[in-house]
Image (cartoon, rainbow, N blue to C red; front, top):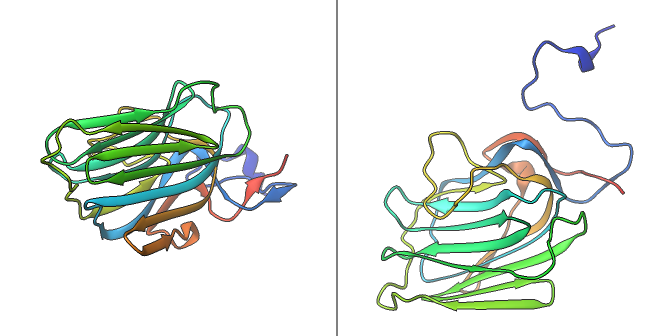
Length: 201
């Protein structure tokens, strides 16, 4: 009999949950790479997801060109921060109030409309106008990283590198009238992610 709990080393191995529920569990050691051939952010994009975590910092999502154009969603000090760069400079909007790393499910909607940023967390809404109105489009054609990103990969709109620990579900990328629901189990690469199961309460 082999005792996996006493393995000399482990990579991408996570536990099975006695009780589970819908979602994808990120154990804090890895990330998911989606759309390896590249995703174009452009002028208008909405990112919708639900998250649950007890950790105050972690990357939700990053899409970044090799230059400066990028978007990033992250948890910093228990608040959600949405960063964009359309090529002229980084602009951010963040939630305020009670910390969101309370182990409860929260709904997040981050919307970029040309040079306006709107962040909705649960029933609260936050807005920022980009001070660079001449620059409206984030020119990316790069993978979508969830929960973190590989060492050596540049992410221009993420201020932290802490990998997310918790659960994500119902991730959608909405551009104009085209909505893509992310299938994490079909990701190009997974590390430290259980794609179709979260631990139950």
